[in-house]
Amino acid sequence: MQKTTFKITKMDCPSEEQMIRMKLDDLTNIQSLEFDIPNRLLHVFHIDNNEQIFQRLDTLKFDTSILSTVSVDNFTATDNQNDERKTLWTVLIINFLFFVIEIVTGLISNSMGLVADSLDMLADSIVYGLALIVVGGTVVRKKNIAKFAGYFQILLAVIGFIEVVRRFIGVEKMPDFQTMIFVSIVALIANVICLYLLQKRKSKEAHMQASMIFTSNDIIINSGVITAGLLVNWLNSGYPDLIIGAIVFVIVARGAYRILQLSK
Image (cartoon, rainbow, N blue to C red):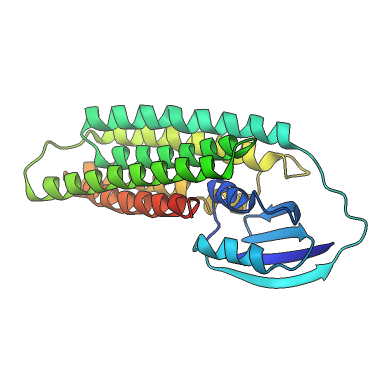
């Protein structure tokens, strides 16, 4: 048995962990995966060489490199699939619920920041949903669903970005900054809860490491929308909302591209 440690520089969210799991799912030489997201490390316990594992990881474009490979004696794999499925179902429901909440309140309050953030929540929901489908599913089914989900997400991001440009050029109603701030704060709390649930099963102390909170793109995005809401009020301008909306739509498109990597 061998243990190879990979440095994955762009792995900073639990949803990216699930993408990596799906990418390696059908490799029979892998016995176990251990993730250290705060330090961007993945420990893979496997037989044979690590070349195929590295090639799979490299297709995700997460900036992967091999740090070390060592022999391991007396390895025992743990089976926590049922607990993991329960956790994935929980975070999927939370993310999809806030996708609905944010897109509805975003449209009502005229906030592109909230609409964009809702699509980021949808992207996470898709990843967690794919992770659940993979269990007991075929590789072909996984790839087809990933391809559809990726293109659908890109389409939504492009439509959203075009709407941002249209609002920059035209004269639009000011977004409701109070709704932006309140909904984003609640969404931020929801993301913290998701991170807690996802990391709890890996922590002996049963609490999240503080570094995890600050390395999550979701929480950074929530904070960005809150800041944009404050600037909308302070500057009496809708531009901060449009700027954060444009940035998040780009992030959503990048996430969709990563989902498409699962279909290859």
